[in-house]
Length: 223
Image (cartoon, rainbow, N blue to C red; front, side, top):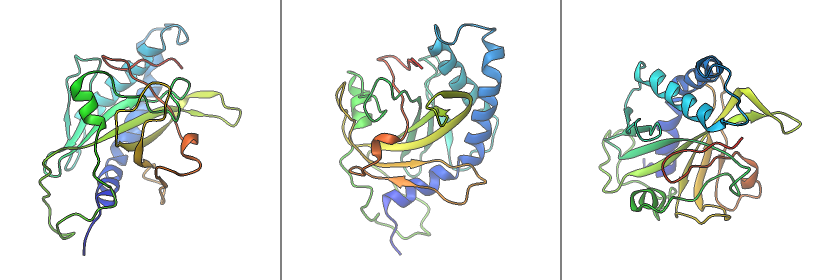
């Protein structure tokens, strides 16, 4: 029985949901206390960075299964979740749809970031191993973006006490003001949810998902 790259990615990422959802809930609940009443509208980036730092702290104390926690938190809280044996690497970022069409910011100008965004492998390709084979040595990491955002209410207003999570696989660095190309986007549902939805490039409602942005050194949240 063959396994597509898409199925491998979705299975492994959804396996983190029991850690990511309570971690995000705790981070959102504590951020206002941690920042001591700092005006969110004037210093929204501090809230984004603090939430990411709290999520990292939470993950560091949990059993992540095949995943490991990597990245240099001194670089604007850089947080990566990695499965070394499969070559899967997922970068935690904040969405902001107000700035970038479709939500995904283009890669910054650094070579490593543009390399991270660029992958021409199709997620629909069958992997060259059987389902029960545990190791797949990837020559180039499969890079995903793990995106969180505040939940939007029915009137479009942000709810700072609730959140959304999704993972995307980009195929090119993109350009400012344009939609970043992707071939996979799927929600990371709560462990109590029994279904998940996947979106692919070309879907009519791709632009109705979520939003985020980063600057050249980390993240900048303008919500």
